[in-house]
Structure formats: C-alpha cells, structure tokens
Length: 251
Image 1 (tube, rainbow, N blue to C red):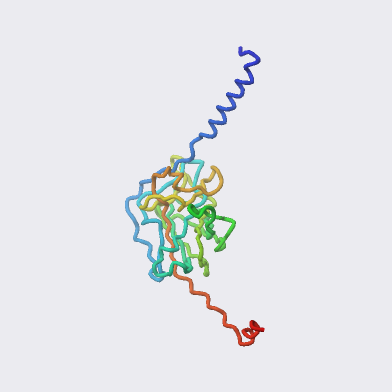
Image 2: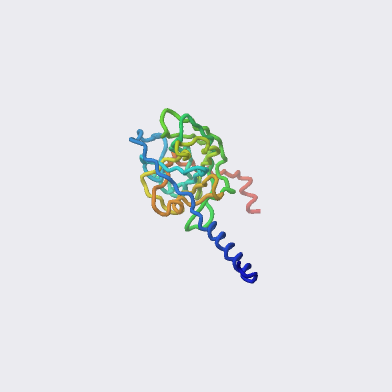
C-alpha cells in the first residue's frame, strides 16, 4: 500500500491525467460522402445581377457521425464579387440555394435563415448573431427521390446588405434521419478549398457556437456549397427640402 504521505500526490496525478484526457479529446471529424455519380444542371437566375458562391458545386458532401450533426452554417457574403454593383453599394439578397444530403429517405428538416453582421477581428471576421440585418424566416426542406437535393429558398423582400455580413442557416432537426452506419444528414461541398474566416458551422451535440469550418477540417478540405442570388439595391433618394426649411438653416 502507498504510504499516507504519498496519497495526496497520487490523487493529484490522477486528477491531472483526467483533465488532460478531456482536454485532448478529439473534435468531431467531418466524413466524406462520395456516393454521388453526377451533377445536376447549374442553378441559374438570369434576372439577378450576380450569383456569388464559394465555388462550383461538387460531387461529394460532408456529414458527421452520430451523435454529431450540422446544426448551423454561416457564410460570409462576398459583396465585392458582384461586378454589376459598385463595391460600396448594397446587395439585395433574393434567394439562397443550398445542397443537402439526406441520411435516409424520406426525410425532412426545418431551416431558419437570416443575415447577421460580421463582427470580431477585421482580419478574421466572424458572425455576430446579436446583430441581425435581415430577420429570420422559416423554410421546410423535404426529401425527393434521391439523397442529394438542392433547395432554392426565396428571401423576403428588402434584404439589402450594405456592410460585412454572413448568411446564416440554422438546422433545427437535421439529426432526425440516420444512415445505416449511424451518420447524420450532410451538406454538399464546393469544388473550392476551404479558406479561413469564410464559413462557420455549429456542430450539434458538441461545443455550442459557430466554429471556423477551415479549422474543423484541419486546413485540408473543401468549403461547403451555397449560392446566393442577388442584385443591386436601389440607392435611397435624398429627401428634398422645402424653401421654408432651407431658410430656417440660416436664421
């Protein structure tokens, strides 16, 4: 038996081992799904000025093993990518298209969409969910004949974005359907590599909050595919002053 004087030291060592074990627990790792064999026709909206996206839609997707799942996705809106609009002008978000991969069929999920301001460090902006620029609205996604589906979701009129911002999609019940191996439903990837400070996700049944997708991938992997349809917001006309109001300025 250990001597009584050594017992506190042994207890301290055991506590340190337990703490280190929890601290180094592996974060959820996104899993690739390569079951898709072809791409659908591109989603086009000829009436809009531009269709920003992180990259073209790819053949594969990402999902998480149970009990984790995608609970939210935020993408930084690239306002300067719309050549038809001046860099300083506002973008009018008409719709968002996202590709989902259903774990099993039939299935459905309730989505909540909004636009929130960019906050944090200017060198690495992050979504500030306390500053809502376009109010949240609901959308129900229903599975179709295949597991890979694209959904174009119209935005309410008047969603003009004149500052750094993120489109935020929250999945309220994306963990209901399960794969045969226990995995959850997923999100289609783009063909472009993920970049830091551009997309953030919340992983259900893991640490709360939005986490940089780039860091979750370990800097190796692709961005998640999302496409916006946008045009230029009409400039707000200056309100003309009456002659009487002008005279009061000089009294």
